[in-house]
Image (cartoon, rainbow, N blue to C red; front, side, top):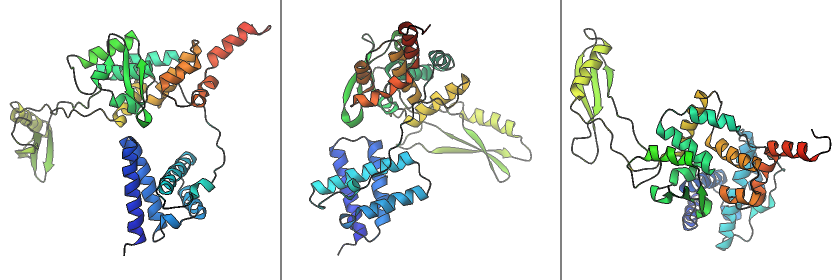
Length: 349
């Protein structure tokens, strides 16, 4: 007879298969799966089908005691509601216990954004064509960083200055970008005609010198060598007591001058973490702290509203399913509010 632990894990596995059928992204499946598995671990030998709303409350209280953020606890409750809705549809439970748990209302914080002159400083601080293309594309389209990572070259129409994006829940939409973003993208893409728009490209390796006991050892990878997997090449360089580190480096360069040190392209998209690092570092060079792709997205929406864009148009460009999500930018857009006040109020100016 199967234990309750195995039974709960089987339910979590089937829930993951259901998310695949619903075309959830890999990142969403990973996050939701971790939450459900943590909940199953919390239940121990208790079956998930016999749990009550008291168990849900105890699980959430445990997360709070471990100093998880309120937003994280909110997301956990949402995921558990979806998990029990799945069990309810399958006839395994008669009701969804998480639906009987309510958290206090949390006031939504206004999103952080950049001023228009700060965006220009950020673009000017970009050092490489890739950095500039990433900043111009995200600010020019207002796309999510996960959407930018999944764009393929075939989805970009350079002449029409628009791109096809695959958003949340498999929703497809078209976004626009301006001539500055087009020029930056063309400089970055070069002669490429296929693959992802932002590819995970590697820098040329230099090899390195390793101290191994009393000896200097040179280590590098030669990509000209046959075989499906590239292995490290190691070479004795000299004795540490008779050779300095710089001399060992010069000897390593002699050994590697005929080797192919350029890493083969993986054909994989640039990771979302790399997107964030690129924008963050460009922000530091521009004198801006903690700049993120999400801030560029917020700035995109706010600047459009500042210049008189219709809220429905901004909603479509951002890919929001509900207009209420977009309305938060009307509170952030103070420039248009101030100009309207000065223009319309009898004593505004």
